[in-house]
Image (cartoon, rainbow, N blue to C red; front, side):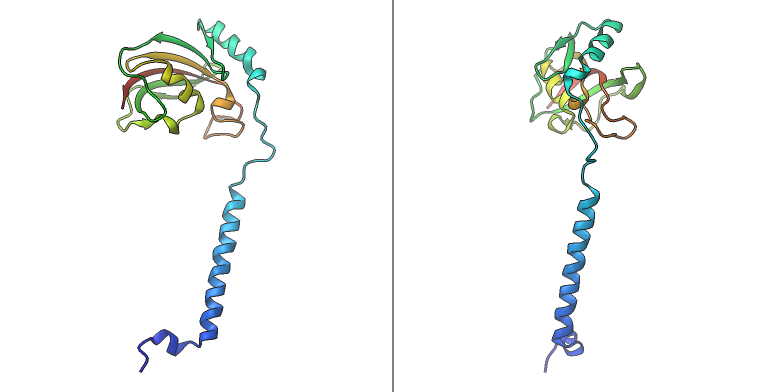
Length: 173
């Protein structure tokens, strides 16, 4: 006596057909989801050289004595800090203000993040700029769009946006 109710109820050919149909659905769903996630083909990343005059104008207008990093990032170290330096394996707690080149604040965190962020998971401009200071330090960054969010919109931040950040490095782990 066979204890498998499923095979007794359905012929083997129908089970095989059902398996093939399920595999087809999984394949079709995978293709559909991956097609929807493709990058915008019309998105063109601004080269840093195209944004340098905008960055330098912002720095001059806002009294920032900016140093150019080889990556295209511009920064001013306000206070070096005395604690450990962050590196790509570090988790950090910070306070910051983020502004567009118009001066409008788009993001601000006035109290340190409770759960430290992995530096390696943040925008490239921060991954380059934050390790320039020690824990307890303060830095101003003017981040070219290619080192920020690139050419695609990120939440309310339009694509190809040069961004300013005023960052205090509160803790390095």
